[in-house]
Length: 127
Image (cartoon, rainbow, N blue to C red):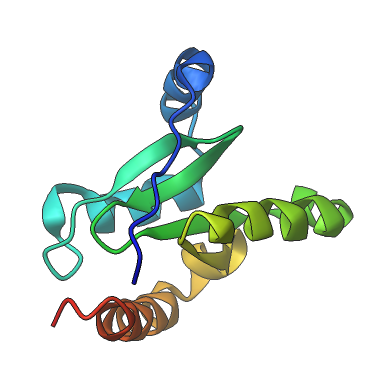
């Protein structure tokens, strides 16, 4: 797979910092499972600027973006689809999880997420 440069937008740095300080409950729940390499040994960043967007979570090694979608996403499907296409054009894989499910059925989200990581490892020939 050809390596693509993941663009960093320094103009979004301050906004990303503010978003890290005001994470939703579901983002905090997932972050507690991702930080310090807890998720299968992979490091994740939170509220990471990529291009003109700030993604909820990003794993550089897996080139994997995780988005936690609340009800506000119900009215911006076209925006989210366009955003995903742009992120995917950088060679990233984007996963979406519903915020209510993260809080109420985390074990199911975690199982799916681990499967997605294994699939991504195979795609990138990491293991």
